[in-house]
Image (cartoon, rainbow, N blue to C red):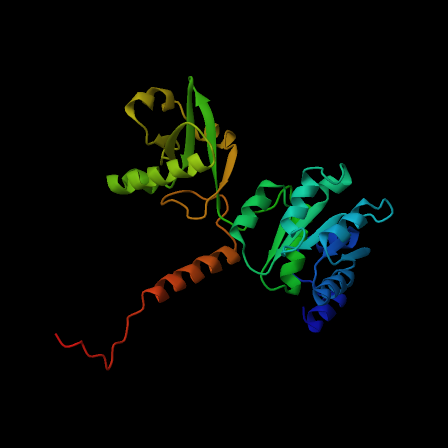
Length: 297
């Protein structure tokens, strides 16, 4: 973090960051094996007005601070790095109550990653993470992520997510998947391809039931794509019923065509896809054979 950024914060110029004064009411514990990064983040938080900032070079050191009744901590900002205990494992140990209940177990927890780690994010999403800071740290971005973590009821996953309704209707289990209305006009091959992707996704999530794409029609009714034997059960679906029963949020690394996303993914996710696409294109580059001569027959 550049000194000029810190100076702007110290001068009170945190423009565009809503509710930034919550940082002035929060006591932090920063965990990172990089001493320079520790000092930089500590200076930043102090410049933002944080009343107390603790430092720890590793999760086990941080744990001793958290368990000290005299060292009150409201929010942990922890780098996800390899070691005896990774940042993710530290989060999981806290949330499971392994290292204490009450304030220790439920402390706000922000995970820092230099780049997006998909498997770690998926595990952190399931483990009650409060927020993420992914990529190179900068003054405005870090403050905004901290504010979101402190004020929001749950973290917004940096991976794209979709909401589905896992419900029982007249004795049969369904997984109602909101889709764009264009699904109804798509060719049969595209529809079947989407259903196949959705079925695989729901199996990964261990959700049982008939996977049923649904959409809102122009007259505000619910359209659905299902076998004939289910039509009588689904005929009474309404938008209010669907909205009231969106009870599962699923991470989808490659969203199926037509799927309606509740979270489209972060800039880090977009960058990951772009890098993968570039790598795939590079793997198929044209081979230049200038000067090559075929061996004589």
